[in-house]
Image (cartoon, rainbow over all chains, first blue to last red; front, side, top):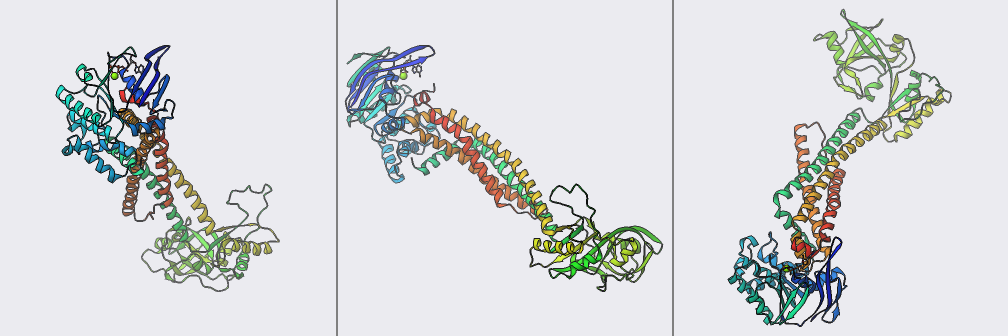
Length: 222
Length: 401
Ligand SMILES: Nc1ncnc2c1ncn2[C@@H]1O[C@H](COP(=O)(O)OP(=O)(O)OP(=O)(O)O)[C@@H](O)[C@H]1O
Ligand SMILES: [Mg+2]
């Protein structure tokens, strides 16, 4: 359960203040499928970064499963991200010199899990995304869709309770995008909270819950 | 994150930029091998010189007339005229139980002639003890006889150069030689020994010290060479020598004692300082290589901003990032050190092959110091890029803003 109360995020640009988010109140229950839409520059990514605990709010409170995490130290936030959050990005953000399997393995590495267990989990994950035969391939040897699937495997390898996706299909053609969405929705059906920022009405419309942001405020919920 | 995983990940990053990494490693390697090679050269020079000195014969002590501090003390302002060192002083030293052998030395340059050929030659008046103290070997005949040193026997021993110039291929043993206004019979020729301790033993004539006293019309010795008891420490021997001479010189301590040990120690010190200096200069290249590493690591941090952002986003604490980049810098300097040591050692071996005279040994301290300095340079110069990487804000790093 994620609860945002009065979250504001202001950027200081020289003398000026830019309000990227203003007074956001948002509750997201475990297992929800939430899409965030809105015009470019409206604050969608800023909001997602707040939910992801990647960025600190200028004002407001963040409760994660009832615990106030607003002002926890950085390392503690990193641990929460590692254990509770999975990330899928528009630009995949795979490490170019590592193979598909090694990219998927990174969160396990960071968590200090021992090598034999790591190997088993990675094999499982790469089979689940249908890329078992490509595990030794580097990202530049994979198509966009395959890269995003690797990224999803990496995001889910720690079995997080929440998946955060910022325009996961933004760099993919429609058919490939559909595959990726299917994969994410499948995870959601198995109980993972899915929060997705998208420009695509059709994709956003599939979500069980849709919010719209304009100028840093939530103006509509559906 | 586990230590081994960090190292593997950092190593992967190094392998990811083969050219860049190998150039950095090369830079560090050149620095390390320069230190190793130059210090072992310095060390070789040191052992070469000290080796030359030890050939003089062990336990040799030289006594000079006059107090003459070689260790750098201020000489007395009121110049006390030193008493001469005489043959009797030398013989008194010879009677001491701590002294094995004594060789007085009287020195001068005198015209020497034989068969109408004449030439100016260094003439040494000494006793039979000289043969033992200076470890002399005879090419022909025998050395001066061991009789009463006060007897001016008309005998002399030639160095090889003098013999060749005066007699050429002809027979010299038993011939008469005119030395100044004295005549003496050649009883022996020294085997060639080259220059040692700054004097060319091949280019001189030796005759009994009593003959030299008459020849030079003086009783003062140039110096006295002694061979002391090898079981005695040289400073104890020096004390005993001083005591004997003071007894004979009315309590006046007016001699200077040079022991092989002290000469060796002085040379050793000078050359060690020299070697350290050379090593330190070569060490500067290690600092340069360290800066190279810093530069490469800063480039690496900039290029891998998105990667750092990703790692932070998926839950790597800042400390992990810092550690990864530090390990990377240390791996670069470590690999450089490894290759540098290898190259330095190979170079030293090669030099030894080319110049077998140089007693080339790589000093352990230079290996330790260069490796230590290289790793320290990696640590110090890797710290800034690592701190910078760890400070990156994950959101801005990810968006490349
Ligand atoms: N680090 C920053 N410094 C200054 N301004 C920022 C920063 N990050 C975001 N902004 C500003 O905050 C506002 C919201 O940005 P955000 O990235 O959340 O928009 P978005 O809705 O995700 O847009 P898009 O659909 O183009 O991705 C924008 O006006 C943007 O310029
Ligand atoms: Mg955005």
